[in-house]
Picture 1 (cartoon, rainbow, N blue to C red):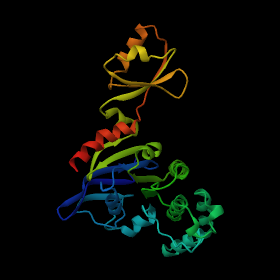
Picture 2 (picture 1 turned 180 degrees about the horizontal axis):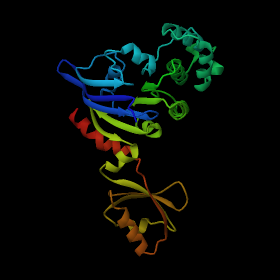
Picture 3 (picture 1 turned 180 degrees about the vertical axis):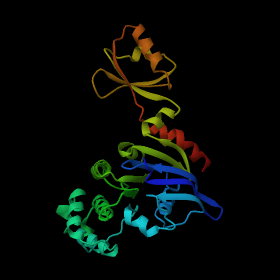
Picture 4 (picture 1 turned 30 degrees about the vertical axis):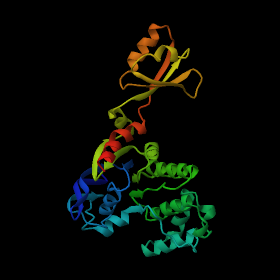
Length: 309
């Protein structure tokens, strides 16, 4: 499978400061790839290099087989980009803003396509209202519509859900998932919001101080995490009295469903817990490990870097 985005030792320096340090990335067609990291980690600088908006100090980047430094216009014609701050004319309607940017990008026969993308992002009913009346979530969806006008093969979204209410976040994440699944668009999503990345991304690169600390599917990253883990236990009675004296068990609380309990214990201690309960005659009907514990991932990959900051 040919990579849609490929970087090798991509590096960007400003004076003595290395903002992006020997970055190796490979994005696949139709996947949602998350660049996850705190503000200032180098995510936006990486995006700007992929778009040909800033030149790398060293290393290489290929976007759809093109070098953004040498072919910036060809890259931009096939890549939709939503920056972290979307700029629209507030006095114009959503439809008028799309028509204006389409003209700037020399996109012809845009009316039918514009109607289609407005429906796709859920703004057809608001398209003729001034953008100044839109919520931030609506402006972000209009930004995605704008990026889709060129029918891109890659969509790059920089912090698309920041400062949006939970309902608006859910709508945008569902829209992003649909674009990858239904259109086959490769989506590069930059964010510092761990749980939103977990909800939508197929793979993640954890970006800290310009370097990739780890990459892979979110549940695979959780497997590599250190520290306690949490499992959900289903049993015929409350196990608290049997487990409270076990030194490897940290906390036991009732879970959402009757007969289920959330147990925080030393990583790798699940088999020992099951053996203890079974020996005491407890009927265990299920044990589910919470592999996608992004709080654990956060502690593992970010807290140490904060200590160095």
